[in-house]
Image 1 (cartoon, helix red, strand yellow):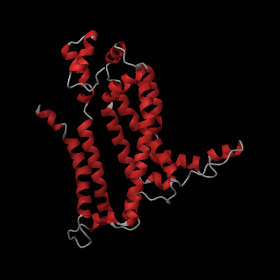
Image 2: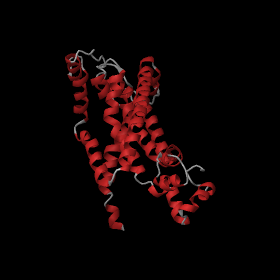
Image 3: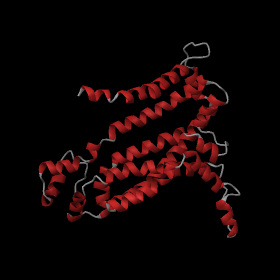
Length: 300
């Protein structure tokens, strides 16, 4: 047992070197000024009109892109979970294949597609259709976010759906529940951990991104990530950049708190385990759903 503890040494070294120490450095710069005195002025920079506008735009685009990802990912995850292992594995491989390419290259590819003289407008012009004026707009940024972060929404939901016992769903339908009722009262509640995890994995990077807005927004739409980047690279003001980063950390911690509260594997499988523990047969499932106070499923 003691020997196994030493295996965590490299991970501990990596975490301290590349997670803990950088966070402490950011915290130091956020709470000090050029003279090294403690100040909250760097954190207060988020209240300026320009930074509030950038933060509001970041929150808006992040919410919209996360909602679109959820609407697209859930049906796809349900389709994948209904396939056999070989089919679903192949489809998942095809779906995540673009992720093997560099993030920057994927975004630049969309820039080439969407620009005024790009591939899409060239095709539309060839068939005598009006050109799309989408580049350098919030719509282009949302499109880039959805394209890049959609797999992070699909995979957590898919992993939860494939763990749901199909016998429970079939039993509900045998007892007279419609497909929509079965989905709303059984499948959807049991898939909430995957939904929460997917929302977190999409919302956080969408909130902090600056590459997508730079390339697809043309630098005309400032997000909070762009403000932080400019603070470090253009203005060389590490204190303000670190202060704004600490403000964004609040949103990240809130997302992690949501994951800790809802994204638990045991919660997703609680109903299945209760059925197995009590050895309930399908004819007895109906009263079990009525009387089990720990079940996530509704009463038929």
